[in-house]
Length: 172
Image (cartoon, rainbow, N blue to C red):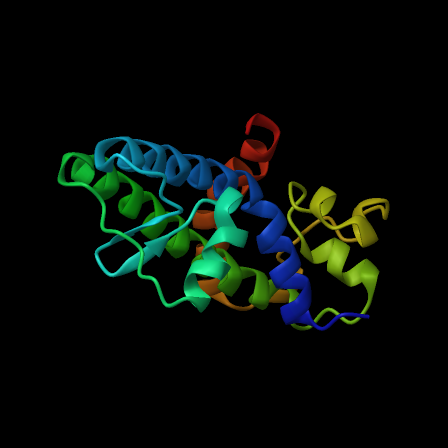
């Protein structure tokens, strides 16, 4: 059986897969526009010290990295769109971090698949094939954190975000 951090990593990866695809699409579109503005085919760009490479160009980027060829900067005309992209990345990174922390509190004491199932909010159980078919035996997913007022408050605050990301998987 996996340890709690491996369960959490798998859940986070599945929970944010739609957002990752959406952001990759934005990076791909910015790269397409940047290529048009610079008049040549580009395989990614640099913006504010960060490298942005659309997933469709990962293989080309590996070859470019080996040749030590730097990525071009983003054209000035695209700065406003890039600010929105960076803002989205930062927001999603913060949400990932907060949800990871909450999942750790919910799962670190779980020792069986049934306990993992019972500790997960209902919207997350379909993301974990190993437990998705198990029926809940404990009605309260906060059972492991019931004596931690701060964790309970965090759970109530983050549950709508978790549900939103779980639903976004069906949309994107």
